[in-house]
Length: 140
Image (tube, rainbow, N blue to C red):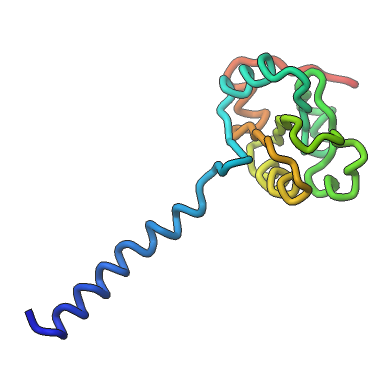
């Protein structure tokens, strides 16, 4: 095989492998952040004694769509400014959710940046929670 053919094969291999390698860094979980489906999230709520349940939606969504019992409401874009409402112990399990699972991802990243080490996100959000048959409460 001549040198030009070998260079071309190596270039093609890089083009095939590079996207796979870059996707490896875009997974939905890392050492400190795990995305859970509704059933896994329900188990975590039951099993993780002392976990902090965090709703990252808006006040309007909290009131209109209901929320999980014992949740604390801190909108995702206010977490950095409201750290006094978060657990002091950075190893506390934080179970968080939003409407559909998008804003809670941003909130999870913020929590990791703040030093929390056990962050678990409801991948489907409260919509998926309700669709899976789990209940929510309305009011305060």
